[in-house]
Image (cartoon, rainbow, N blue to C red; front, side, top):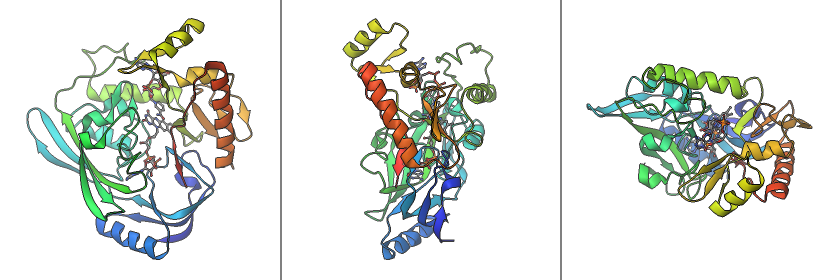
Length: 332
Ligand code: FAD
Ligand code: NAP
């Protein structure tokens, strides 16, 4: 049902105060097309929201905001090697991870990431050495500008580090309706990241890996239900090898991870060194247990978040000469 002047404060994990001009859930392509007709007549852009865990909402979102309410999981093909499974965009991501192990493996390390299946390809979600793009066969959705249903192969999705074509050229123009996963049936756990490398690879089961990741995350990251946040607020910067060498010479404790091109620095470490961890700035702060996570308290608005974002960016740049880019997308 379409509703006017719809509050979005409860629909984003930062709990930023926000209201949409109009809002509706949809369960099928036909319903989405009907909603596009309404938006055109009302001269409103159409914007798709998932679980609201990676967005920065403005106080007034002058748009028809839509959310997928479709959560089906369908096995398309299975052989000895692989399962192909279609999952609808509205499915909760963590619930899908828990159910995925009945079909195949690979996404266990992505347990407990908030949000929906439909948003997962947008920033190619990743954690503990695994990115979702490695396990996506194709993405199907509706392009608003051409009014066409389109399917993108994994190569066409152009997945990168927290990046994809949906975040770039197709931003605000493509509503993902379902994701086809290609899950190998053989379980080969990835335990290269520090908190997982103490696990005994020979003894891990898919369910115990999901549990281990869940436990680690619960011990370290704030639960958005209690402490509003959007996960990592800044992306880890990738700098040239020369820049990384110079910084590492000056700051021997700086975490540096080699990349195919250049080196990745831990943004949380840079922010912590500038003294932001746990210090409140009005209703916003960088989290005391992980300086990369921005948290809010009651009544925070986008302006409060932007003010702290700028302070952090300027301080890190002044100290290290590295510019941090925010990870959550502006939703206006
Ligand atoms: P939203 O925040 O609602 O939307 C994000 C973007 O995707 C918006 O631009 C929106 O328009 C677009 N979008 C949403 N649905 C669709 C759709 N159906 N079609 C097209 N576009 C769509 N991210 C990681 O990568 N790794 C992590 O480990 C991780 N940990 C997190 C931990 C916490 C505590 C929190 C709060 C966030 C974390 N995140 C992490 C970020 C976030 O959970 C992911 O980016 C997630 O995929 C966002 O899903 P969502 O449904 O909430 O999307
Ligand atoms: P962490 O273990 O404290 O490590 C800090 C950063 O160092 C991470 O961001 C990670 O980069 C990088 N890193 C650590 N070990 C690495 C290795 N062996 N090789 C390459 N890079 C390595 O991180 P954390 O905050 O607890 O998060 C754990 C994982 O969950 C990370 O993968 C992180 O990306 C993910 N996470 C993401 C979000 C989000 O909102 N995007 C929020 C919470 C957690 P990468 O980020 O590139 O992995």
